[in-house]
Length: 149
Image (cartoon, rainbow, N blue to C red; front, top):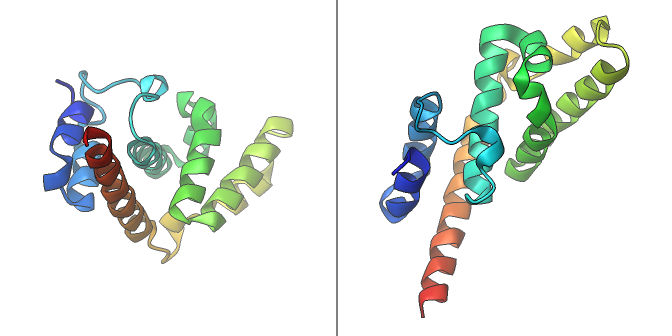
């Protein structure tokens, strides 16, 4: 059983923080599904993974790492994940950066815009993610109970 299946099996007993922490700790293990194979998992799990992946890449390699590494191919999913958790400013910043990068990859504006991300400000994206995961987890559990009856 992989980490995601284990999370889903134990979902009623896990807090949003437990889920996020487990995802962050296990994402780089070999049993973890590849990011392009997440379609069978609930959207809130996918969104948390995309945001954690973005955060890791941004913290380790800056915006250049995000744009020039494989994570580039999931930027639209990361933007949607930001929107889903209510981090609309982050979604807008990444959308602008991505649009500029596609036409002018060496633009200085990319680096300037990237300094507005939560990582460089006091904006707490993690509380938004935690609230979102908790709400969506409860909806998912309620729907599971409805489908059983």
